[in-house]
Length: 267
Image (cartoon, rainbow, N blue to C red):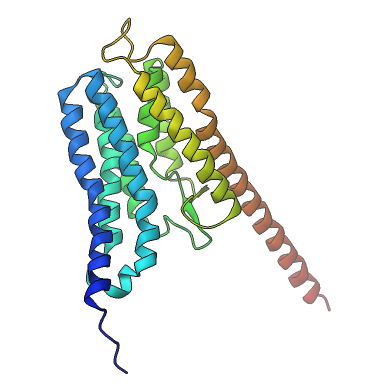
């Protein structure tokens, strides 16, 4: 049986999708330049670029499925490219920003290896995305963690505790919402995420170009950031609740199966 060779138009569209994904790598390069500048204004620019990279990551999969890139270009693995970019824009670069901005000060840089190595473990797990449409383990949203640590600047012990806490969650097999997948909860999450992203942009626009009394944010922006935490908390709590329901359902089914097996063993 022979397979018809994809047309030049389909191959062109497939390569366009891969090129679109690769724009995340371009954004990553600009992030590094901004971070190395080391000013409050350049850090703000780096976070805006992280939002751009996240938008690309959230939409390229839909485009890839639409043009069937795996079928048209089987020799090029877009998922590898995506993972390569995501590890940089979601993990490595946000952690670098925490160091460069002094959120994790000199003498404590080694702590940043904890989330870095945990994220590397998470990215290399073959079951990082479950068959029922969830992330398994904390999905390395270190860009979000870095944003709030940068704006809120909690005490160092709180910062380090948060880094370790989410690093440990990478190894805990809890399910986390995968918003780009279909489903009622994912649709709601995407709608809330869009509103949250607008608030984040507003916060970034409000951030002063220089430190105010040793902080990167003024008091009004601090409270705005605290209010915006409602969405990340919604995401985490809902994900943990779903995990609890799945575990409880599995235990109930196991107990029923054991009960039926016991009855079947009776003489």
